[in-house]
Length: 314
Ligand SMILES: [Zn+2]
Image 1 (cartoon, helix red, strand yellow):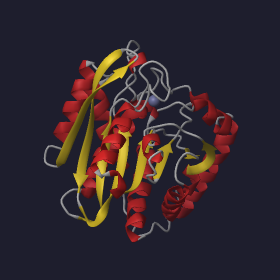
Image 2 (image 1 turned 90 degrees about the vertical axis):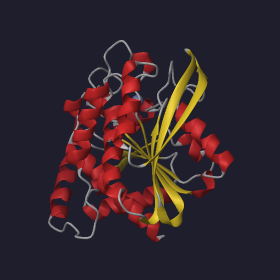
Image 3 (image 1 turned 60 degrees about the vertical axis):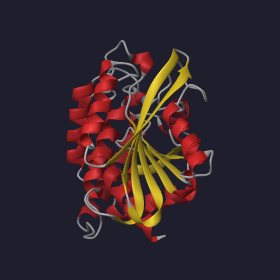
Image 4 (image 1 turned 120 degrees about the vertical axis):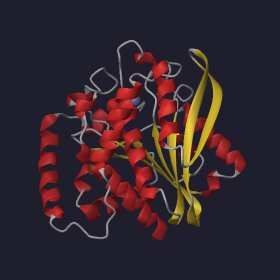
């Protein structure tokens, strides 16, 4: 991500004390919740998601567009989904650094109901950070691992409800500096393509995951997202006792969901814009694997799986 860190800091980055208070409250609620861990709720394996993240980040390293690491990232995803319905969406687009070829990947798990739930994450790292060995463990890495593990919860059966499509976007990050035309290249391309071919109107929900591996997890409520879908996510989180990790502060975030928001698709952007004290790890060489936790990925994954369940019941 993203273009809106200033907003995020204004909304929720006032420093350690407030966050510590939130964390204490969160731990208390989580502890209370764990005693009544509802038996029928989906259980996501955050430890496995973190293991995938580690493997992905260690294998690919810096993976800005055009780098050897990016080619490794493409190969990594193709290998993970070699037995699934994997589609590659390759396109060439103009950027401030000249024409670039980018690759989105879509993994389709068909369902019994007509309609699609899209779970998305970007997988590349920032072109402007190509000289500082920036590996994007959280930003791009953690949610790639999350989606890879999500496939283990979906694979091997027809989904009872809507089809679920995992979307790995390319070119989310700005090539030079964030603007409407220098950002979210992959999702802009795909939203346009899916509008033209009729896919877009079948999408029931577009859930974006970004920067969710942070061990100090606090997911902002994004006011560019669709209120009813965020309410549903809040409901899902609450069933696990995870609600204090969600939506305690608000922001307007620009990310891969925006091209879909603009076309009327119900969207939710799940993002934690407070990464390290005063967001110090964000888009720096400090965005490394040691900042991540399996617990945070469990919280995000549980909530997304249960949100799918709730969407299927609507
Ligand atoms: Zn980013």
